[in-house]
Length: 413
Image (cartoon, rainbow, N blue to C red; front, side, top):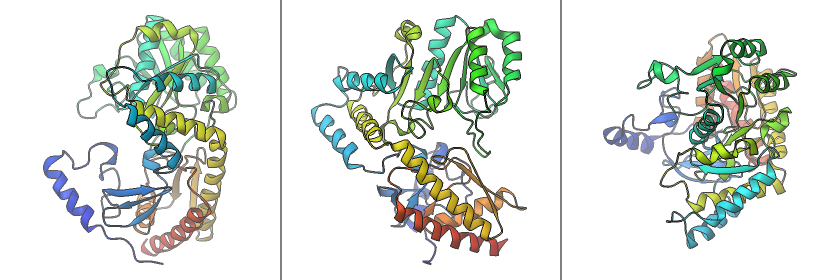
């Protein structure tokens, strides 16, 4: 097994960045999110397929997929060709692009519950718009969400206590436990005529916690309660959209929301999000105002159209789910042989993975760091992601690295 990586250029670049950028790397790419013990590089140089290379020239098999957007593989030739062809004609322009109409038509045809679609840049844009529409449609203000659920970086959905977030930002948000129909019923009995929307992911995928599937009959019971109280059902499919079912992840779990939000994998890394909804909310969708200077860029829309067509033609979600099962079944088998329990929860196309060890999270952080230093990029705090570009070569090599890394970490604890 090769020696572990060094990050000299990455460290030097980070020192430069700290002088001119708050935290050096803001947001969820901030190295503080990882265990900052030298396990991780900070800056990428290039990427292709299921791999990327950092500024020190180290190569990684990537199971973060840029935190989800990369679903067909980095620098996918079909997607990039579509983008180049589009931007040679126009990208950000004074008028809306014609490809926007094509993309909306494709989504409406693809997603059974969708009668209309429009577009933004980030997942938070889409979830914000969904709430605006729900409030406009109902004349109500409150929103019910799941404890630990994340729907973007807007103040109303950021964790309480974070810098710049006030109690007033959360005044209209009610949190309830996942898979708890009685809790939803209680809130609706008390606040039903004040609640505009219920927002949740199709299954529960918080950070630093095991993922949880919906209990049998959960979504059917939830939908019945929402209809009874005239509350808008919003599906946040930002993270798992097109990794479970091309028709929308809600179809996989057997329910029909009023509005659904997409981002992450929709354009294979190009900046785009989408919101789709039923005819019942078309009028309200036309009245809300949220926009941006780059929301009508044509290149990302062309990327999305190419990405979705490629996924549809090759049954992408099914392939990725099967690939994920091979990867993580292999990890679990290796761990079991070493006397370590590796827990894998959620869909195998984007599972949450953790070890059960007396040292707690420290052991798992050390394992993810050791894998990364050997060329298998894993994080300890978030869902991992599988792409259509992960093939047998990546799977076999990942198992080799995981085994060697686990042996090294066990020896150190």
